[in-house]
Length: 307
Image 1 (tube, one colour):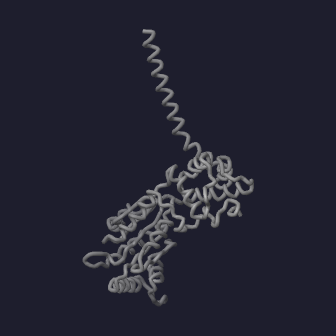
Image 2: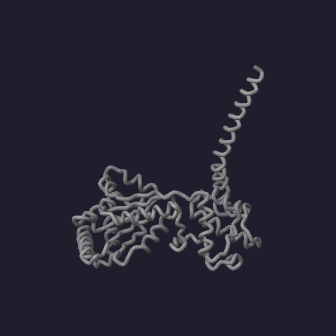
Image 3: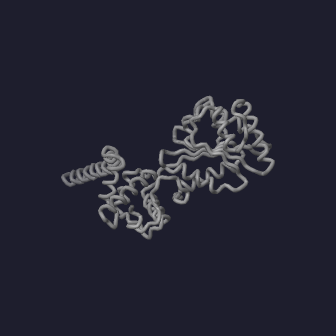
């Protein structure tokens, strides 16, 4: 609705994980580099964690784009599966035929191992990527570890990429999963964007969508960082609603007031106020401490004069 008004050819703030819109902040570059490095190593697992909405899935999509034709990838987006269901899904993703009525853990495992060996003989790497991996059951993770046991003298024949929320880190600290945890050759925790990166993020997505110059002014970007906490998905939601409001008000620029109004609509009153207070609290404390120190210095100086 607002695209023509603001001179855009595409929605710049869709929450769909489109790799074309991936803003490669320093942290996103590091995350992608860690995944790429891990897949080139000899170990079986690499792991990317981060809070909800920080861009983990988008980074993984970018990774899939960059893998060459010599890689066959199996992707599991719904990991709430039993061990048997997970192996069946892996077979489906790798194009392995099986008879469902006679399927068992051994049948699936044998077929998958045969496929891994065949791929290796033909110069094809095999990668299994699991999103929302914090939902995996411990026994399913153990089954994955067993799949990575097939190896040559120099490398594992199956590389597994685990993408998940911070709970995944806690899951891998469990005693029964210590063998798997020791096989994670690269891990990275993706943090939210900084205030400077939020402004760069908005400008980047605006440019990709065909915009000439972003209509978000400095005060709007500052408040956007305060309320979003630097989380890309929240930034997208707020910016999209702010542009709709700006269009309805026929405003050529998005300012502080429009961002605040959009945030109340998207997040609700309590969340917005809470995030604003969290941002300003350390500033208030800093001002208070400074005032106390200056007061003490002034009192000491005055006491010296009287002496």
